[in-house]
Image: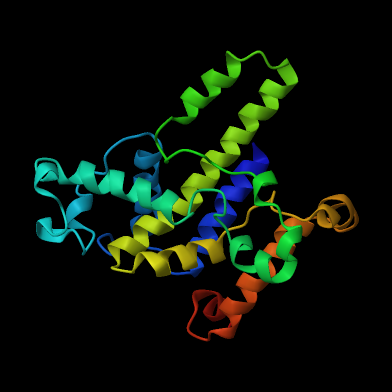
Length: 231
C-alpha cells in the first residue's frame, strides 16, 4: 500500500509540474478535480458537465446527432477510447515508448512489459479483484495479482487525470499524449540487464533512470514550475 500511495503522489506532483490543472476550477480544486474526473472514468461513469468543458465539444460541436441527448456520456466514452488509442493507458503508455526504440532497438520487447488491455472503466478495480479471487490461481498468485491491479489503477489515475486537464485547456491530443508519457514512469519496462543487474546494484534504479530525462527537460525550461520551485 505504501508503494502505491507514493507512486500516486509522485505521479500527481509530476502532473503539477507539467501544468495539468482544470481551467474551470480555482484554488487546490483545480489540481484535484481532474483526479475526481479520472475516478469517474475508471469506474465506468460519466463525467458530469465534461462536454461543455472541453473546447472541441463545447456547445455541441463534434458531437453526432445520436449522442446529443447525453453529450457528457459521449465525451466520457470518447476520452476512454482516446486514452487507449494514443497509448496513454496501454501497451506503451510511458516515456519508455519515446526512448526505447532509439536506446534499445530490438532488445526491447513490448510484449513482456506490463500493459492494460481494455478501455479504462470497462471493468472496475472491484470487478478485476473478484475475477482474481474466483480464479484457480494459488493464494500467493491471487495476492500478487490483486496488488498488481491496484498498481494499474494508480497508473490510471496518474495518466487519465492530466489527459482530462489538458483536454479542458484545449491542448491537442498529440501534445496531451506527449506530455503524459514524458511525465510518468513505468516500473516494469526494463531491459534484462537493467532488471537482473542494475536494479540489484542501485536502489530505486528504475525510478531514477526514468525520471532523469523528465527532470532535465523541466529544469532546462526557466518558465517551468519545477525550475521556479528550485529557484
